[in-house]
Figure 1: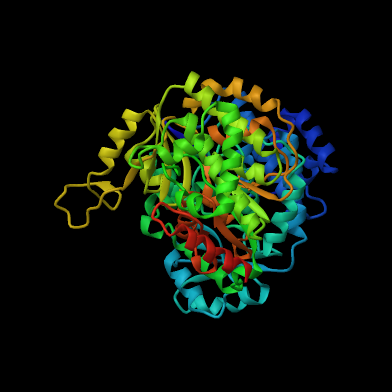
Figure 2 (figure 1 turned 135 degrees about the vertical axis):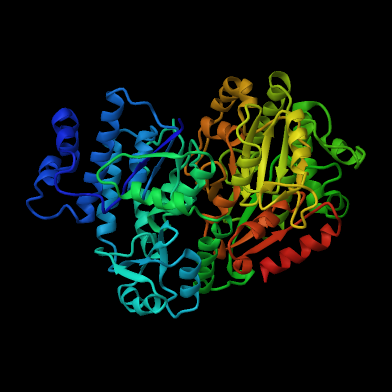
Amino acid sequence: MSQVFVFPGQGSQHVGMGEALFERYPDWVLIADEILGYSIVELCLQDPNGVLNQTQYTQPALFFVSALQYHDYLQNGGQQPDYLAGHSLGEYAALYAAGAFDLATGLKLVQKRGELMAQAPKGAMAAVMSLPLEQVVTTLQGSQFNGIDIANINSREQIIVSGLFDDIGAAESLFSEQGARYVPLKVSAAFHSRYMASVATEFAEFAKQFAFKPLQLPVVANVTARPYPEQDYFPLLQQQIAGSVLWYESVSWLLDQGYKEFEEIGPGMVLSKMVRTIKDTPMAKSQLNLLEQQRAKQISEQRPVLPASQRKNLLMFAGQGSQYFGMAQELYQYHPEFKRQLELCDQAFIELAGYSLIDEIYQSPASDEFDYLASSHPAIYCVSYALYQTLLAEGIKPDAVLGHSLGEFVAATVAGVFDFTTGLKLVVKQAQLLEQKAEKGAMMSVMTDQQTWQRLVGQRPDVYIAGVNHQGNLLISGDRQALSQIQASLSSTITDGQPTHSQSIHSQSIHSQILPVQYAFHSNAIKAIESEYLAELAKVEFNDPAIALHSCLSQAQVEQFTPEHLWQVISEPVHFISTVNAIDIGQFNLIDMSATGSLASLVKHGVGDSRHVKAFTLINQFGRNRETLQQTVELLAD
């Protein structure tokens, strides 16, 4: 039977926890004592100084007991669960159980987390009972308390709010008048709120010294209520400190996926009771986005809208699927600098491949699919780079870069990680190896969210989620025939996410589009080239980025490049919108360097509030590119 293990957070600790476990695993106790600098047994069993409930002590103690109980379960013949989840601090125990880090690393992380949170500015938290989430959100939005955040959504009618000390106290009457129970919590700071942002930043700096391993078991993340990626997941763990714990949604999502059996690992039964409550009234789909909308509104009210000329410039580079015959042709014909730059790129390509890329792009029928990798790969790279050089000539310099899939190779070139010729060779070699060794496949853009996709398509060995462009747009890779069959099935009618008869007046279809790509990037389907391509990458001497480079692989800024990172850029899923949302985009002009303008569109659809977004498209397939480029340059320069 499918089973989920859940690990509790603060509030579950009590004197006496872990007693039998400490006796069975004395070596583990010695490790904990050495790392923490005090006796974990004395703290948990006696608490002579009365500090167990202080967060800097609670967090390592609770993590240690939960980790030890999980270890004991396995030692006694227990089977690994199918899924893991943890509530707030409990997420660290869940990640430990999934193989993210060893016991010593986990203890160091939670000890530092507890210390930083204990030092946070004074704040407060309270539980709002007997009011549904939507009413709590509406009440806050209509009040003067715009400094209060929703910290935890524990169940349908148990919401934890967090904010400034005076605001939390004064808000009691606001909710009591509506019949809610309002219970102030015994905490010293506004956990899981915007007031923890500096703590999250400092914690991230501390965590850089540790290596986080690929997850061996799936873990549902507090901040997304969806599974962590298998690798490069630390940004979500960082966000958790200041983000909301979406427990109600997490359990509801697991129930929706068919997981009905939950077992609590750690002290107490707090989560077990919550799960039973959630099973009775799981979250409705209409509620899932309310919290995100509220926080986006709060952020937009606090952040001033800067004009383009006062913002920094972030260049966004696209990958496979953005190419087409004739791309940037108007600029090539009428913009001397772009023409000069593209011809320089073409000369370098001719020396490598023996034929002209410009001829391929501009002398092929525009109606044909530009999907053969030997030319489309370097074409994307060269057109993007020539456009970047054109901006430089116009006086527009980048302060940061971001690459979507193959676009990260262009971003790395612009950031000085390697020079243009090296990047071109890597792109050409990648295409050659794929055409020689990998089975052909396909990629598809689907206008739906992950939950609907999993419900309608589920897990298949020949199909992969290759990326999340935004909440309602997935990138799918896999066998071409399988994708065509899925595309046909998605075009049939559905109602509220469920298959239905076509006569329903509420029915709609899910739009999808097969992309001009002949290989299933961002999936195991290209694994055949891994060893040879890594060997090719190992020949390159990587420089540290000279400007900020944000990776859609790690959803964070990359400080150092490795062969493994660049391999994963094309073989692991793309997390575009979460990467964008991790950037303070109100400080940047987001300049789309693709030939389609698609990245600017994804940004506008994917951020919570687009009023503070300034996203610019330079070229597209519909014409007037000279005019668009000139207008953008003038806006950026004014």
